[in-house]
Image 1: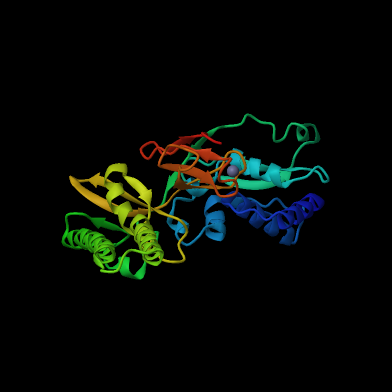
Image 2: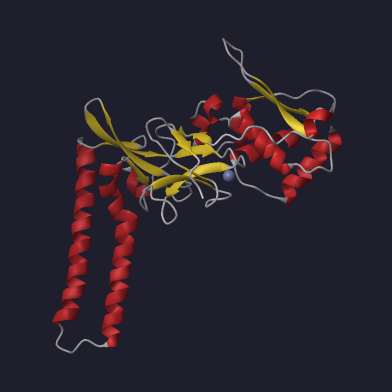
Amino acid sequence: MIDALQQLKSNLEAKPTRGRSYEIISYIVDACLQRDDVYEKLTFEAATLLHCCGTAAEREMDPQKWMPNISVLQKALNLTQTSEARRLRFGYSPGGGRGNVSLYWLELAPEEAENQSGRGVQSDEVTYRRSVPGSIKPSITARFFFKKGEIKNRSVVGTAFLTSIMLASLTWIAMLSLVILSLVLQDESINMGSLIHLLIAVIGFLFIWKQSLAPWFKVIDECVVKAPLGVAAIFEDSCEIEMFRHERSRWTRLVRFSADCPLCGSNIELRQGKPDHVLPLVGRCIESPHAHVYSFDRMTLRGKYIGP
Ligand SMILES: [Zn+2]
């Protein structure tokens, strides 16, 4: 068992992989190697694993929902192991009922099962998780509007916010028109230099428009879009804005949808579907963003393998 754990630890160090399942495996391996009695069985609750491996934003989630499915954990474990040492597998006892929590542990896989490990039925479905409201920190400027991570569109703050977005958009368009007009109206004939200036100005304006302003218009139709630049705090990972109806009013919320990749056990996050897919948003695995691609359904929080 110790040999297998040590081999697994060196495999993890040799092939660093990002993702929730790998962080959980790494934490369990370290804890198992550090215990005094090597024959003692160490079991872990979902809440402990969330506390030790989750990010600050994730710690507010329900631990059971945060935990990857046991088949995803096993998949990540299989991909980390080589045939040199005895293979390990995940043990799992599902909880249920009052005070009966789910437990996870690592154990040696029986010899006869070793050859079949990793060849189980491959699922091509993923289930997304939605972050808890308020767990994603807005940037300093957006913090004033996003109280607890959300805005009621028709409230005073919401109206002020949406008006400022409208004003910023109008100013942006007016400035671009002015730049073009000033170049067209200048007395000297248009030369190569002024054309290059114009091109740089247009590209700059379009970039800012696409990254910061356009998503606010797109979210009205599409319900979920990638969060525009400057909305989430700098240290936050990629996240989304979601517009939804609740109690007869519209709300805008800072949110993060994530899932576990059934192919490799790493994390899936929402990204643009372009250029290889027609859907505006798809779930892409952070370790293999163009090979492990999944659809995203906001209502059922489910997705299917669609790529490459
Ligand atoms: Zn993957």
